Image 1: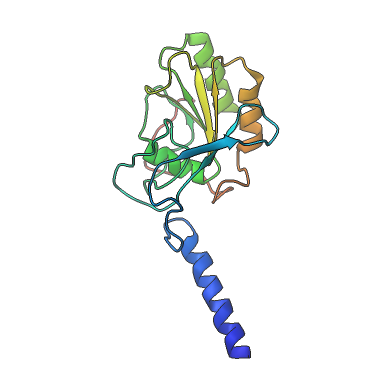
Image 2 (image 1 turned 180 degrees about the horizontal axis):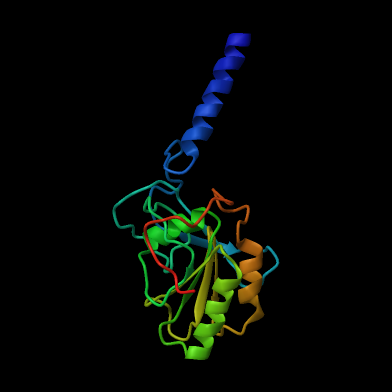
Amino acid sequence: MHRRLFLLFATLVLVVGVSACGGDAAGSSDGGEANVVIGDADEGIEGVQAVRVPDNDHTESSVDYGLHPAAGGKHNPVWLNCGFYDESYPDENIVHDLEHGVVWLAYSPDLPAEDVDVIHDLARQDPKVIATPYDDLEPGVAAVATAWARQLSLDSVDDPRLEDFVVQYVDGSQAPEAGVTCAGSPLGDPIP
């Protein structure tokens, strides 16, 4: 009896340990790498979409997330240091940050300077925010706020839901490694 309990416990520990970042105990739930929007998150902020994320394995390859910007999935082992940037970085690096509980503010490269300042201020106010320009936003979209498995598209940076999203989803329970740092990486030198 004790031996069976020990074996059951050891198996559980192994499965949980392998399922952490870089593991592949369960594999992809849908057999692919793409993010799939599954509907409203229904977590208090209107318009936030829940996204099914197939896994959180490490890869040094490019990933076809299907959703732009990506909301999770396989990612590069090197994350981007949190902060504000005026240049874009690969989704694969920033998805690693999302896994750590970071919120990514992908903003239109065509935003007026005063709107970029709003994004910059949000990045200054929270050490777990990354802000980067993003070329592939839909026309008319000012910014897309993304956390692991959550996303909100906005046509104005003055929308109060932008700040609400940051407050709610930084180190949110949906992130596989919430609370892990987004500093100390060799990638990225944010603008103060």
